[in-house]
Length: 87
Image (cartoon, rainbow, N blue to C red):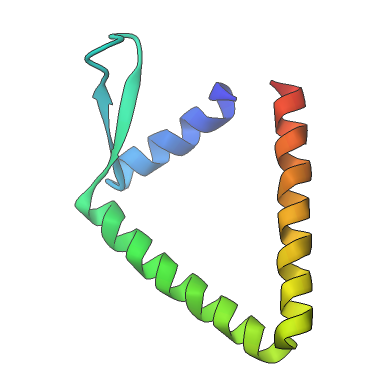
């Protein structure tokens, strides 16, 4: 919902991770563009995330890793359904 997203967006703008641009189609709305600084942060976070997932896969083994993926997907589906009910 907008009230919970707005402070997050403002923080990203203040940290120069995204830039806000007024929509040319609908002057009341804005689009967000990832800045160069934001792109660098995304690359760093992605590398850390992939390393963590790789370690999990190695330590858990294929069966437990696949079960973790399945449960994570199920949890995300439940949270998405919850979010759509609240809107």
